[in-house]
Each structure stands twice: as structure tokens, then as C-alpha cells.
Image: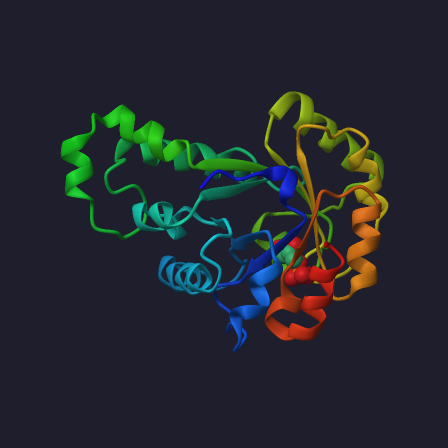
Length: 256
Ligand code: 1GP
């Protein structure tokens, strides 16, 4: 499935370690689903969540967003449209360089099984020369330039974030993403708390090619609108999807 980035305004973050709402029809108005969380995520619960979302909204792109290579396998890669890998500017070295080089090293060493526990696909092995398979899998991986701004969040804990960025630094990270690193997504992450529009405004002035996402604490139409008016291309809604379907639907209506 080709992703039309210009059409993506509302993104739902589905945490595979949390129960899904009873009625997944609420997903009908979202433009993209990211499956990932920061606690208790496994390859198995990721696959279950991907399947459930696919059944509910077959025509909406679904990305896996892992925080650990152990969540990624040939099977997860085959079932999603892309694997979005966070690169955390204000995290530790592991989360901007280390894990990524490990991931691609593993991919180059054993593309048939890749990481994780899936059974190697014998047909793929026979049909492809190693480097073609490596290129095919690598083509599904995309980087997200992240700034994690809520120090009390699990996202900050798992990525070694000890300090938040000032708006000027957020703007700098956005400019670097657009002109230097080339990640297709720049993500202002306030996971679990509403951070307001200031960082989004700072980042937006430097981003043309890059899709600017904001996530964190959005649970109303007003907050969704405020972030979009500040210049975000898309809002990401996580907790509210799991906890409050009525408020979640309000966040969708702000994007229409
Ligand atoms: C989390 O940015 C997302 O990675 C969404 O945040 O769960 O606070 O909505 P919330």
C-alpha cells in the first residue's frame, strides 16, 4: 500500500500491551495506525494488534513502531505497510545510532529469518539472492526523528531521555531532520501529557518535505485543533483511543 502523506492528519497509536476498545469501528476515521508502545510489547501481541486493526479498517495503512529489535520479524514486516523506527535526538546513543546499526547488521546477516522468532520463509530464500531480500526488507523501514518532551513517560525511560529540548532546540532538530538526516517524519512526543503548541510552532517553520507529527495527551477536539493550527501535519492519539472512545471520536472530527 502506498502511503499518501498529504492525506494523513489523524494517526492512532495502538499499544499492543493494552486492551483494545470493544468496538473497533471507532477507527473508521483515522488515516494511519502505528502499532507500538513502551512497555510489555512482544512480537506476538504486536501481530495480534495488527490483525485486529487490519480486520476493522482494511484500507488504512498500518505501521509497526518497535522500540526493540526483538519485536520485529519477517512476519511483522510482511503484515505491515512499514516499520517506523524512532531515532530519539535527545535520547542516549543507543537510541539514535546503536539500535539502528544493530538492526541493519542483523538484517544483513540473516535476512531470511531477520530478528525475532519467526520461521524462515523457505520460498523467499530460494527465490531471492540475499541482497535483493535485504533491499526489499530495508525498503519497508523508515526513520522517525523524535524529540521526547515528557520526562515522566515510559517513552523517555526506554530511550534514555534525561533532558527535554527548548523550543529553539526542537527547531534545530526539525531543521536537521529536513536538511541533514532526511527522516520522513519528525515527531514531537509528549506521551501521556498535553504539551501545547509551542514546540510544534518551533518545528513547523523548518519542515516542508518532512511530515510533522505531534503526540501526547490529546483527548479533545480543542487540543487536536490547537496542534493542527500550530502547524502539525498530523496529531497522534494513543491513550484516549484505548480509554475513551467518545473523546477519541472528537479528535477525529477535528481533523475532518
Ligand atoms: C504516544 O504520542 C503518542 O507515543 C500518543 O500519546 O498516548 O498521550 O495520546 P498519548
